[in-house]
Length: 368
Image 1 (tube, rainbow, N blue to C red):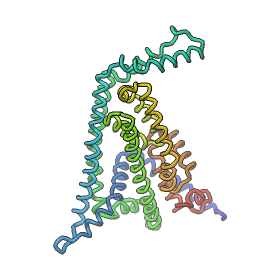
Image 2 (cartoon, rainbow, N blue to C red; image 1 turned 180 degrees about the vertical axis):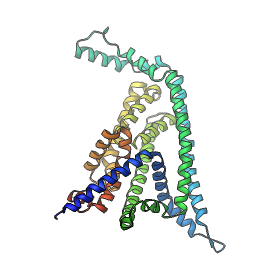
Image 3 (tube, rainbow, N blue to C red; image 1 turned 60 degrees about the vertical axis):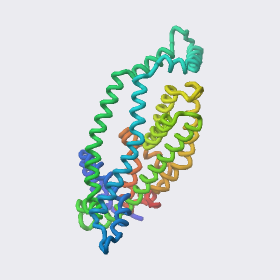
Image 4 (cartoon, rainbow, N blue to C red; image 1 turned 90 degrees about the vertical axis):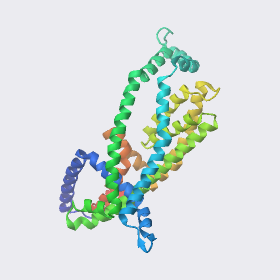
């Protein structure tokens, strides 16, 4: 298919306009995030709103405002239950770190540490006086969990909680109106484009809504299954329920960040196991159990669950998704990895709607 110069001109103009719009959205990123989260919650809650509206009480249908409020309250209840179950686990771990016995922890892992030190001394022709992994590890742990660090951690948690309250109230307010006034989000978006493109934008939003709702619901389900599997596996080896659930929670939360998140979560989990060994296993065997369990479960998750989630749900090739995540990580670090797949999905959908004359776009979007 021959592409005429006018097409390239429209492409350049469109790219410039898109760059300007993206810059504005980046400047107001907090507000945009509130609107997008609210839109996702509204998509997930809309079927319930429709069911409630369809109910008849004494010959009258339930008002949509009431249905939207009840749905929003259900979302609040689910979030409150989640916080009530897991927030105490986090604060209990902080309390344990404050009262941590460094000597007992170091003694529990002294065997493998000394073996590693001997290996390094033989490898680099060093003497025992030149290197002391035990002292280095103890100093590092003291620096990580000293009172100043813990105070900063608590202060950070307080700031996060305060900002989260503002975010939750803002998102709840926006979500209520998105639930009550179906099509309000579409109207907000289409009002910013010329009338001749509104049908294309509406069609693109339909596709984006479907793909992202499938992606986020799948991501939540995957993280929840991973949390339950890790917690049950840890308890099967004799770990206390509180520690097992904490490790499961850490892995579930960090699993939201592709690739890098589970690695960081694994390090935190091993540290928790070293501080609180399983029964009479000792810190060394506990760490080995945690690493083995996480490798098996994450292996199943990465090679069985995630290809379905990241590929089938957003209709993209797994290698394509992997490369997009790497590029997003190079541009914006952890936040880039977190937002890579949703952002790429939106870009692909709109590219298919407006730039389908290019063979590369058709190649990348043929499954949508």
